Image (cartoon, rainbow, N blue to C red; front, top):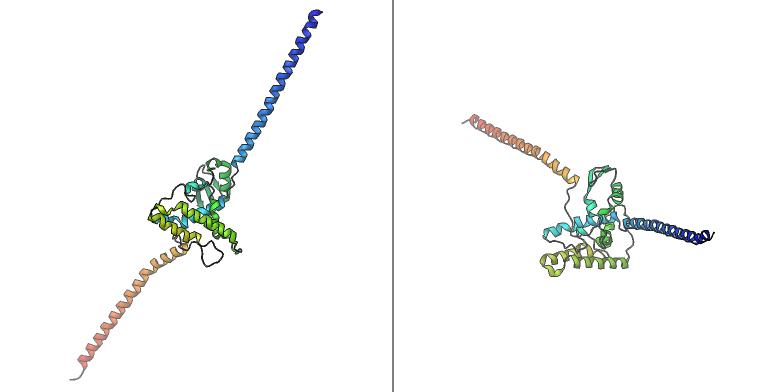
Length: 272
């Protein structure tokens, strides 16, 4: 009887220890679940991109068409620290892997999957190839749209909005900072010329007084369909033109010869 009574404290201690171990294990499992949920939330947040792909694409199109031809002409190499450099476009690698097969077919250059429109390919990049984005700070090219006049490139924006002096001043300041950073005047004659060019091409138009338009120095010369059609038409009509000139000259020569023959005949028949 005394042994049974002595065993009760041992059983109670074992029961308490078991409950403590089970409680600790449950806490660890809950902590693991919470940690996993937090990790998943962090991954979801990581994939959120607070940068407009469309406006970044417009900004790069402006750089490529209205700036790079003049940079190449000067044989100047833009520093990677310049925000206009291609390495500073977080979407650049994805954009370079777009294959426009035909009007209603776009193809992913990574996995070769096809889509009916570019916007679906953009969604595919966001969902499947987000790991190829550059998440570094200052990599959103769309942030430069104010300085680069992206709104003028949007065809749907036909109505003119009232000029905001404060916004124009901010864009002008950003534009000048890009010129100073990308084309330092102490880097030689080419950099100085491009610095001046950038101010005239992009910055001067940031004013509400009017009179100055962006891209005043022009851009990359692109052969349009109409220009190509005119060239083909000229090439086709040129042989016909020369044929008409040849026939006209031959007729004129024949006519002159006939006149000479008639004159000679008249001189022979003239009475002495």
